[in-house]
Length: 328
Image (cartoon, rainbow, N blue to C red; front, side, top):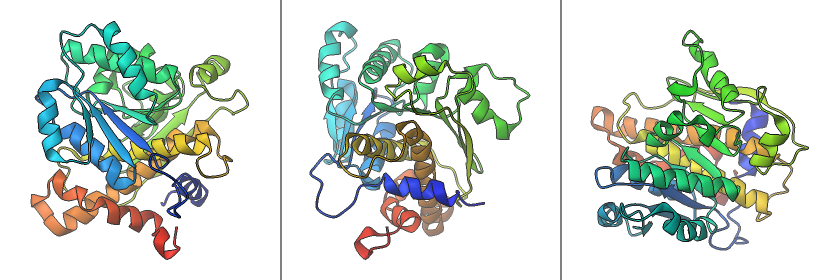
């Protein structure tokens, strides 16, 4: 069953026009936070995927030991090697806050690792991002971080998470209902449950509405949500390491566009901001699954994540059309 047409059209409204009216940065500035020396591929895949989907700029904040490797992968990425183990978090806070204030979305998790100093910096970035009303994607070890302390993200409705096993839902919950159950426990955070079909859910039934709206910097006039969307777009038959990072970067770009849409850079602002995370998760899922299929059709069993990068542009056009030909 395809994504409902009304939802698909809403996603298209959040895609910035390619008509020459926008300047650099108004089609999204993406940021991936946290990379230590053992995991340099993941933040690269997330950041470069964001640009391949259509973000104007992509930043990576990392440890100095990871910076040179990430820089060597692509000159398109802007790398900030400021996460030094000896740096007290409060000394880093002003620099990090100033940097995040220029960006539209923050992706936490790819390449983060589980060193305590990196998790401390990631919590600091998450705290600043929430203060600034940024959109968020949490994946990989970002989920490990918030899984240990659910209140870090609970009720923040500008976030997209892949499922957290530690969320405390009943282990007997049917797979088709888990994403909604986790979203409910987390106060309406959007959940993207990856699988043979991707299940994307938001459920605000357990949230204290006014508090959640205030924490998320969302108008109190925006209603509650209980929605589940299944994405069955065909994907590749091999699941290689790094595909989740492409998904995180893709969802991040749609959220960066959502921030530009919210600011009035383009669009008519008719879509409620509280709907942006579920729309971004659906759009990112559709593009990533199509990318995976296209790469697998060419490379078969030997496909690796690097092969997928070359397919992102074509996958986006396949899903949403080509504006240059008047099809978007």
